[in-house]
Length: 112
Length: 117
Image 1 (cartoon, rainbow over the protein chains, first blue to last red):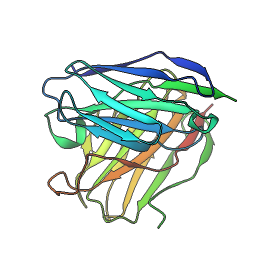
Image 2: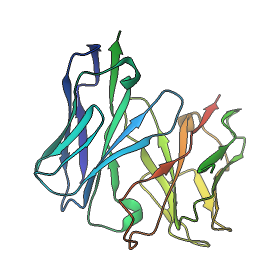
Image 3: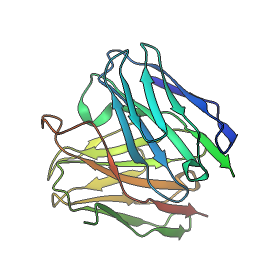
């Protein structure tokens, strides 16, 4: 069974204090790993797709990396506006509509 | 460009009542999905549709029904609401997986918060 876990559950950082969020996954044949950002009371907003081990994607202060078992979302010099819940999801090889598995998320708070 | 719009945004029901959540997308996407989000758990797929007139069960379909009579709309129904269906419901859409521009991204609505007393 495909599974996604995320750690830590919650993270509090001072503005400018860099850190990483972890997404560990088990899937039989990864088609893609996705990172989303979710603000309180809003729907998830797409950040990145990673397809193969060794791949990296960057967007502003965020960089996502992928290995065969996990992905990291690195946040460099975060700002208060980076506060949100970050969701990780994987897509397996089975029929398209059913094969996104989401993790529970990491709730990030960046204090000024 | 509105994207994915869900109505209503909030609803309180009594056990046994019925209701319908409406999802509308204006991006001409073939695929549409209904997820529920509960504290400490990932988004879980309830039902999905791969095109107008089609529906299929996801991970947690019991107690829900769906219809996709028009390509842009995907309705989620609760025939007899139970307290266990208290949750935040998200609709999402995506283009067909065969399209070159498809990155696998799901486009989400802002959610509908349902409380069943």
